Image 1 (cartoon, rainbow, N blue to C red):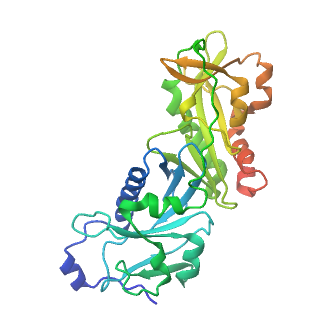
Image 2: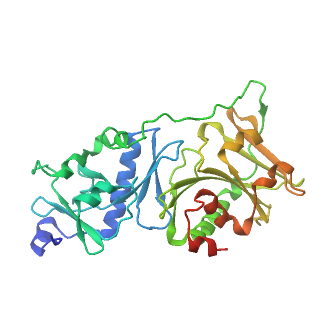
Image 3: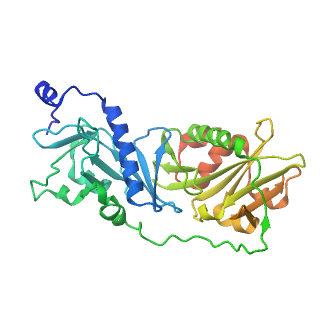
Length: 354
């Protein structure tokens, strides 16, 4: 089946289209992200990729790495009541979804219904077309025998009809209880905030350079837990997470970092990255990559203005013994992180980046 384009008469009836396909896609992605977060407050967050490598957003259960890549294909018109969409390429991630929203003129708002289809089911049902696929369906379920009807959901019910049906989504969230007592040391936050974004952006450039087209780097617009970057390996479809702390080095050569208890969790694919930074903005020669599970043992309980957390500090020169096993040359940090998270799953381009 060829994908039919709207005729000039269709254009006249609808009015002049004011958005390109790319703009319409961006509008739909923003509205879907907002609708998802509002449908599951305190449970769901949405990350957007820094570079588009095929997926438009990532839905994640807060304080976990249960993340699901999503490709969005929006349409602003129907052909005789039929929704038609062409997807030129699709990564066959078994944990991913294709979302197909209708965003009609003149308000450019989500229709009350959309399709949320697991990628394995989409690949079985959609019609192959060149290197991609064509999807068609009816939002009013006019053909009861259509296999795609089971994936039609109501936008106000995204949590119940989509998120809670994702395997593992409703599993308990296991967080480590930090033993903060009334006698816990009151420790102020280290003075690293001024360099925080600088460290993140620098590390993002290294990760993109190392991963190239094989690894997606995504970030929540509003941080709700300790995950600063979500990483998605497009070869193995594994997910990893980074909690990044850019810490200044004080006059005594001490590096401090602090992790809030209420946002932290432990996962084998979550690592904490410490980026020491001198007061003039120059990065130190060495970074530190700490598995999340090791954080409690190498930190102490602290309280900052009533906010409990993990407080860590160590001498940089000479380097404290406890930090030797976490040390990574700064110039190799991007490659080292990808190898740590996706060991035996990455190929040539990552290993050749330096």
